[in-house]
Structures are given as structure tokens and as C-alpha cells.
Image (tube, rainbow, N blue to C red; front, top):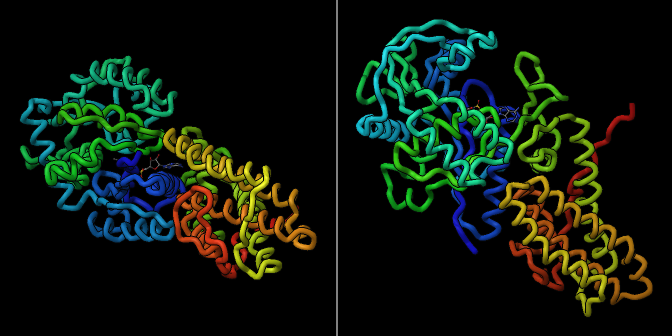
Length: 501
Ligand code: MSP
């Protein structure tokens, strides 16, 4: 059944150039969006930038720039990277845009008038690094850097009021927080009494934010601003028809480090606004570099631009999707990249195209041959090809992207084996009809595989489909036009030559 699919990524802080972690979530969202488009769903894919708050302000100060100039300077780096990575988003928010700021203020006013925001004098430990007040217990751990005691008047959101409701919601909606272990982590966190959330910053201390409409001396806390993008952009408070169409989001994709802000802050904000919660919040793990966290100070940050430069966009997209089991951490190494590329892309997928197009060109006048009557061997391939889309769709709907990609590449292996067994290069000398049947079967299967891999590798699969003279996006058997003249093509994925140590 065709339906709508609204997917979001976190909006990234513009304090530095994007790295592989940011690229990962964005590619993941793009892949899901594209799978849904292939299935015929109507898709809204939202991403963007989180431009307010202390981190961004500090980054700007370091560069001797105004915060806005700094954001304007860095935003194109994200946009260019997304373009290079073939990210097809439907909207791109920058939280400094008027269309967003207006709605944040409206939300603040609404929640204030409903009595869920109050003012209080507060004294506590403030972590500059975390950009929030930490509890005494947290302070005692000594794990927080840049901590200072601050006493000031602030505005608070009555988050505690919704604790019980939230726990009940999580318990009665099993697919809401995924994967399961993150849901349990949140339920564990919610066993402690939930405090209220400080949602203001006095301008005198930090002025880079959205002004609080009922107190001009304050700006709002960056998370109370950023999270609202998920509703401000699909039309909350500005376009009822649009908003009704898209909200609630089908999935907020996030990294595991921003679980609490999404599962607790955001959900209680939505309760206060009397809005439905997103259908799913999915937290993925971290990309580690050779088992350690990626960080600027360690100098091990992987720049996605370098990878694209070396291996092309599609190989990078493929590797990231194929390597990380959604929900778990994954390890990035050049070695695993090379192995994945050479095995799946060069040996399996690229090789299948080479064989099919090479043999058709050599022995069949370069035209897709007529299959004639299929034998049980082809019927088996056909059945597997026809079943592929259903299986992949089920996996994608369950956010098992790695498993979906594995399943498709597994079928490519089956096809290569089928080719070896049937040996159409030999058959061409003894039984032309059989050779034609085999090559038609392989070509048609390759077409279906390409359609199914197109969300992951939009560019390379387009090349394959183009070679096969097929523009269609259907993944059911029998679409390839017999007699089509194949186009010539360069090697799809030239092998990476790995130096032997
Ligand atoms: N601005 C907030 C999000 C607001 S959403 C309303 C933020 N930005 S961030 O730029 O710091 O991080 C964005 C995302 O990148 C997070 O989901 C984080 O988990 C992800 N990643 C940052 N480093 C990562 C890895 N090494 N690996 C995978 N993802 C990681 O938080």
C-alpha cells in the first residue's frame, strides 16, 4: 500500500566541517527515503543545521567572526557535501531562518500561556561543554569540564509533569524507541524523578539564540529551539494542510548520544503542545576509528570528502550502509573499506555487469536476447528475483538496512554462481538458444538488483540501468526490452589494488 514517509536527521551544529558521523545519518535518511520512493510512497526528508547556542557562538568567536557570519560561511560546506553525496532532501532548515524562529517563539508563548513554563531563581553547576545545568550527582563524578557555579533567574519547562505519561507511552508503544536496548535505557533513566528543564539563557551571558517572546532579556535554550524544527518546517503554525499531511514524523534518526533530548525533552514538549509523538525515534551507534572515538584532538576524524575523492560517492554510501548494523557501533578502517569494495562491488556487482554485457556484446550482437522457454534453473532465479522487493521492503520497514543490503548482494552472488554453472560462453558454441536464455535471465536479474540497490547507489545503478536500456523502476520480472542494444560502459568499480605488506 502506498503511504507517506516523513524522515528526519538531527540538525547539525555548525561549529565545524561535517565528518563521517554526520554524513552517515544523512546518507541513512537518504537511503530510507529513496527506498520508500521506489516503493511508491510519498516522501518528506528533512535535514538542516542547528545554528544557535553556545557551541556555535564559541566557534565563531575563535574565528573572530560574528555568529551569523560564521554560520553563513560554514553552511555551504554541509550543502556541498550533501550534494556530493547525492543526498536528495526535500527541505533544509537553518534555525536562523525567520520561518523557524517565528514558530519557536509561538511554541514558547503557547506553552507559557498554558502554564507549563515558569520563572525561577536557580543556583547550580553549569557545564559550559554540555551547555546545561548538571545535577550535584553529576558534578560529583568529576567528569564534566568547564563547570562553574551560576546563580540566575531562568525560565523552566514543566517536564516533570509529563513523566508518568511518557513512561506509559513508551511502555504501550513498543516500536516507539528503537532499538530495544535504547528503549530500556530510557525507561531506566525515567525511573529517577525527572526534573524540570531550564529553557532560557540570559542574554547578558549568552545572546546567540531566539529571543523569548515574553522576556526580551532572554534567549531560549538551544535544544528548545532545535527540536522544534521537526514541526516548524512541515508547517506547524503556518500551514495546517501541510502539517496535517506530514506530522507525526515516521522516524527521527539520531545518534545514541542525543537519545535523552529526543526521547524526553522533545516528547514532553509535544505533550505540552498536545501534538502526537513521532512514530519512531531510532538511535544508531557510533562510527569508531579503529575502536576509538573519532575526535578532533586525536586527529582521527575521517573527512568524507577525501573518501569520495578516492573511491566515489556510491562506494562510500554502500560501505557505510553495509558495514553498520543499525543500532550498534561500527568500526571504520581503510582495510574494511577496501575489502567491502573489492568483494561486493568489484567482484560481485561490477563483475556481473561485465560478464553480462561482455558476453552479450561478443556472442549476441550486443542485443538483449530472447529468453525463449525458461527451464527450472531460470524459474528458480526468477522466483528469487521476484521475491526480492518484498523481502527488502520488510527489512527496510524494520530499519534493518545492513540486512537489506546484504540480502541484495547475496542474490548477486547467486547470479554469479548461476552464470558459472551455466557457462553461457560455452553454450554459445553448442546451444545458442540456451546461451540466450541464460543471458536474458542474468540481464533481467541484474536490472532488478540495480533497481533494488538504487537507493544506496543512485549513480552507479543508473549507469547499469542505462547500459541495459532500462529506465524503469519496477522490480518485477520481465521488464527488460528484448532486442535492446547494450551501451558500452567503463568498469563499474575498478578494483582497489591493496599493497601487500
Ligand atoms: N545539534 C544537535 C542535534 C539537534 S537535533 C534537533 C547535535 N548536533 S551534532 O552535530 O553534534 O551531532 C549530530 C549527530 O551526529 C548526532 O546524532 C551524533 O550522534 C552524530 N554523530 C557525531 N559523531 C558521530 C560518530 N562518530 N558516528 C556516528 N554518528 C555521530 O547533536
